[in-house]
Length: 124
Image (cartoon, rainbow, N blue to C red; front, side, top):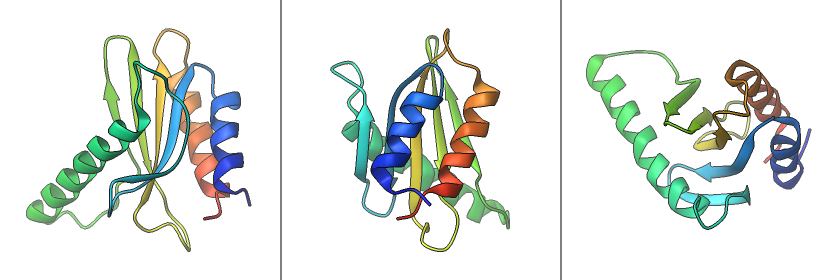
C-alpha cells in the first residue's frame, strides 16, 4: 500500500505525458494532495470544479435510476486529456484521483491502466 505522496509521485513519473495529478475529496472539493500543474494548470481550482462534475453525474445517475458505480470520467480537450478516477476500497469513499495528460505525449489506455493500479494501491 502507498500513501498519498508516493501515489502522486508514481502517477507523475510512471504515466507518460502526465502534467498534473491530485487526490480530491468530492464531499468538500478540497485537494488532499497535488503534484505538477503550474500557472496554466491550477490543480486546486480543477479539484473544486471537477467535484461539481462528479456530483452532477451522480445526481443524473440517480434521476435515471442507474444502480451502478462510476469507474472514471474522461474529458478530452484539444491538447489534453483530463481523467477522473473514483477511489474505491475500504477507506476510499468520497475521493477521486484527477490526472491531466498531454494528449500528444500520452497513451490514454495505458494511462487509465496505470491510474487504476495506483488507485488500488493507495492507502488513505
